[in-house]
Amino acid sequence: MEASQPPRARLRADAEGNRGRIVAAARAVFAESGERAPASRVARRAGVGVATLYRRFPTREDLVEAACADQRAECHGVLRRLEAHPDPWEAVRGMVLRMCATQLRDRGVTDRALAEVETLAEELGRLDAILARARAAGVVRRSVDRGDLCLLAFGHAGVVAAAGPDPGPASRRYAELALLALRAQPPRRGANVANLPEQHT
Image (cartoon, one colour):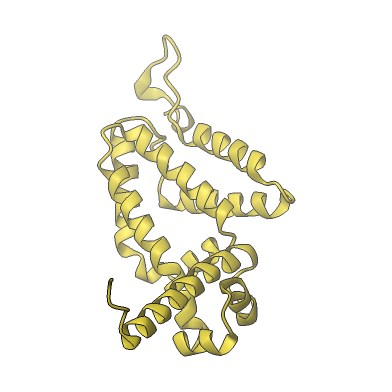
């Protein structure tokens, strides 16, 4: 017969379990209602008391930071994989689709990215590298840069907010149109490629 777990170990395990439930609940609540959602709603979703939540996360900033940490790590991994993708267009396509999927799942992600932009140097560097490789390969328009992706992100956030209780179809259509806008158009037959205007490159 196995020895029972020591009381102190049980307490530590219970505390870690509470922490994990609170963080998961915070991610879900913030995705639904934004980061100003009441702590009581997070605690209720996690199945713990408000006092337990505040023992683990004394301030709202502590809770937001913990809720966003996994998402940032996931973003790092995705961008690393896309930067190494052998197909430059598929890397751009994956980046746009991932952006839209994340905004669809988490309504507060755009505001958080704006608030934390100064801390996102690594992510922005990878994004720039993905776009630079795609421009060099001739698969996106020569003028496309990080600013265009920011505009697409703001536009998609607006579409999701305005699309009602089921924004999925509108999100997918937006992503399709965004990719069409980014992709370089093949030169017209018989056209002098050197003289093509920017919108056809």
